[in-house]
Length: 82
Image (cartoon, rainbow, N blue to C red; front, side, top):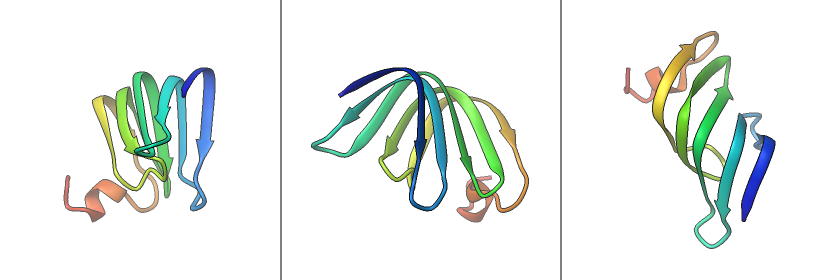
């Protein structure tokens, strides 16, 4: 399913995703975008271009990150990635 325009997704645990265009594969339950994206969770906001993620945003990759704003728990630091 191809989505275009200002896309806003909120998960059950209040993670948010904003993108200009996105594709959702209903079979694999994966989100893919090559546009600008913003992901926010627990006071941390990550912006960049390109996204590969599961539908709940539990696992995601921003292909070209451009900014990380921290406040609250940083999910990247908790996972040992930073």
